[in-house]
Length: 380
Image 1 (cartoon, rainbow, N blue to C red):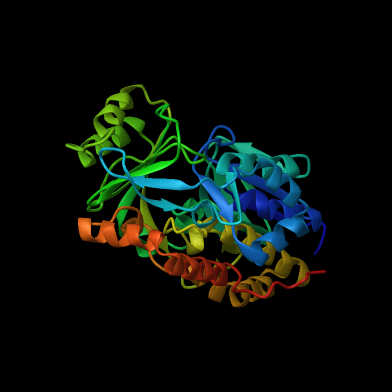
Image 2 (image 1 turned 60 degrees about the horizontal axis):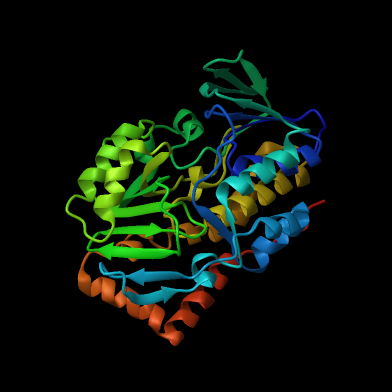
């Protein structure tokens, strides 16, 4: 790839820094822009599964670092309102082969790229104009610039996808559930409590409080913590177990994140000189594959750009061909009905799954098959 190839990446969570890592090694001049004022820490634990994920981490040279930061994959006990154990979800199912806090992984990738890439925090792209010579980009705060390539690695609500492809409603499908991550100071052993259509999980390596609930599509402000708190209070009204206590703590919660469980799908992963990576193109059902897809997708996209000598048309076509079949794992179904079954019989059936060694083995084998369903090239 030409040393002068300039690339703008939108998003500094996982997919963006992973792509920046490979592109910088290929000699590109890389800029990463992130809406948040600083690197985001915290969040739920994420995981890697099987040979494919492990191979990419090895080729990045970070496998040992990721393992050193792993949480250990704790078992999680499903309980009733009295705290009695109903079933145990093994750590190998919830945490894959390697589980790590999302914030720790993000920090690791940032540290590996910060010296070789330009990071712009607290800014966002306001327009993209694709021209024969590059993409002219304007920002909310920074001066306009032109880049050879722009990549949207900015999540399910991708700003780049909206600017390059069109409104979010045309590419994102709501799947009937919401999830929330809330710092409530409720630690202890990992447990999950269900009532029909809603779930609360506490303790362990996940966020201190993890909520999933069924709901019609909402119109709340995703960037307003008070709006998120109001939604949670309504969704969990009348709940048993520790729900009243947790709702009472919401007023003092400093970190609240609420979003839909949705699925994104675009007809092509690239349009002109603009490409999409990670949840912006093929996520996010909260099904446990998003982080692996982001890291493997970054490897493939960067590798195809290098193999094509910077020819974005050839590279984007090869990325599409190599990755679309593998990315179908993101559409295997929403995790919402699994985490928050809609009725007590469905709750009982889900719990039985984890009491059956045969069913558990089958689920783990299926998970491994889906995670390894791509032949990784060795790029020059």
